[in-house]
Image 1 (cartoon, helix red, strand yellow):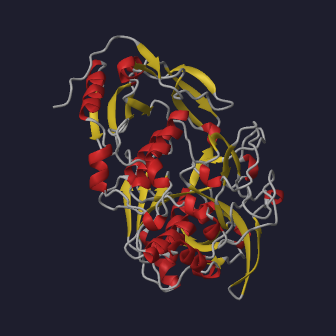
Image 2 (cartoon, rainbow, N blue to C red; image 1 turned 45 degrees about the vertical axis):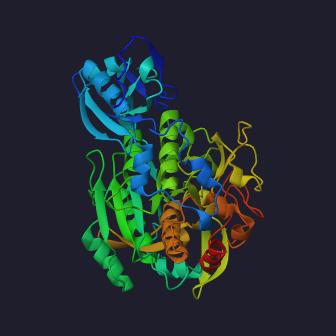
Length: 526
């Protein structure tokens, strides 16, 4: 029998990292309407905290060939939230007039909902309205407060702040005469291993707006002469597949992701997770995808992000926890490194990296300019069209995450603040819209690039590699950085991203380089 939940002592403590300052240029317009309804996501600690059960750290140092991943059933038995923790948060919510909605012990996520007044009172904050040229949003005006007895139990509270958080990392070629490269042609140029189709694999795509149509997918894959892959949509926090009809909007991101990954891993199942464009939506989408026991994705691709300093520390920590959950179950997670060069679009122009690509547990995907002739690579350089105001690959050094052990052999410069941080990206692929991908969006052909295309490209490759190895690739970074494997990548040594310059070996523009798939598979298998 679980121990009884402790009663409230009345004392509180700050939830570290929960406060974010207003967006630059936002005006504080006073308290948000107290009667408005809010639904919060409360993330709980692992039930295994402090135990000797298998952990992410023990897995990260093991070669892929010798790894034993946890089954989802075994993971749930070890790491699910404790019954006492769930009961404690339920009683806390009810004491403050908040109803309890969804409770998912495996995701360690539960929802509390009620009025803004009740939520603000429960978490010891005022919730204000902020007017910004890009959006009107609500947010706490101070850090969230928790009862001291919940201090170790609750690791994140999301939903009081609903500012738009992520942007898609695609770039459309505006030239109506552009034709672009067929996606299979790019895969062949990168020597994707033949005879492998991603069979028995599932690719998860995280999307925060827009949607796709079955008609578009039928037109695109029909044009390639390949069957339409199985595509399933999953709604998170009330979001759904909702095409806007604007080919320059988020539909372009969604359909680009499906078409690139589906063209290169046609036998893989593709699951698209739609969530609101907020920190809450992002965290809930990640926990949903990683712990999706129905679809069981073996690889998750994220083509959205934002400067790492635009995220709350609790959101970054929550993401770290769920990526480790994924690693324990053999899930590979990839993310685009951004399309605005070394500054990642920061108004100050200072160098910074994009999150979640800067997470140490993610395979960050940078961008190149790929020139082909007769299907063969003629040249490949760093993607940088900043002079034409058409973007450049993101990349640099994190100011939040220390340099991971797998980058010990890489020459990573100090971050702008002098921090010895994690270098971004890890790998690269074609991203320049001038050498972009021929896809189909909102009823018409389009040519699209951006690092948004590189993440699903690598996701499809990971699906093929996992099929070829006979087991999930899982947390790939330590293997990718090993000398035997990194030597199989195409080193990009020419170009810059407006803040860093490419050179031999790892660099903060294109990481270790672009894929040579068959060689990569052979190295991983051996």
